[in-house]
Image (cartoon, rainbow, N blue to C red; front, side, top):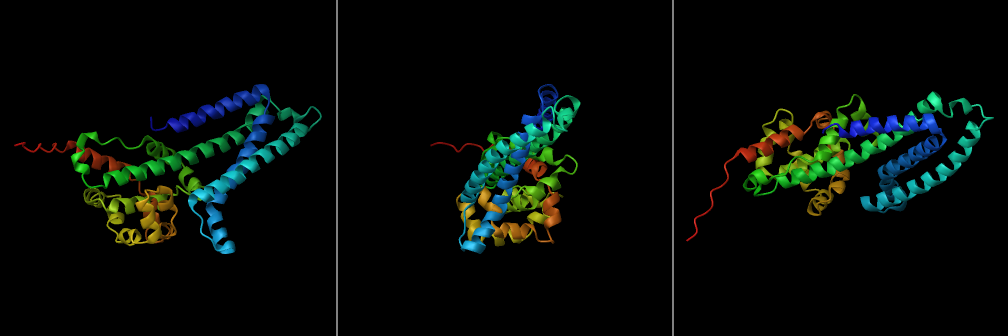
Length: 290
């Protein structure tokens, strides 16, 4: 089901509302605010630590090192914030506190919406990241030599990428996630997809013929990116995160000449139609044995 993550999010929000209404909102609120602080630390660290390390320490960091440091800092922030916030909120919501009427019931349920939305935001961000990695792996497989011989054995388009695309169809959500998600921004991840598709003759020709991707796929920029040392290294190591976050891909994605098209293009229909075309081709006849 394409919209399974949305249904899960709605169920979680309703469940948190019911729990806060009946058992109190203090614990949910403390955990939600702590999770918000930790998530902000994680995403900001992944986004800005490489630049800070290069500027102040003159060292280059891998995305794995950056993610590890950011995750460690986020864990510390979550634990410390959870303890401090629980102490403060218990005082504010106790029987003598001015917020006590909102401790449970309808008021508590309404206050639980904030922490619920933080959790949903983190869920959607993780789904976007997984969808991007799986989609890039899928495109890389389709671009390889001999893909036509696989025919009906080609697996379906990744479900995580389908979920990601369904999430981004919700009004205003894709631009908001682009602004906060340092990895799965639409321009950069689509630029990485075109780099991977460039070497597959059949896939490239198919994308060139599609109305949504044709002009972008026909650009000579992807061949230039393949020659970039960091991009070439990421391609050789099959490192999708390094590919999307490489400076050359990011610069190409933010070029005003193509940024709007890279933001709006959705590759799922074109990729599915390419796979369908391969499955509809007659299987190659086996060679005669003598």
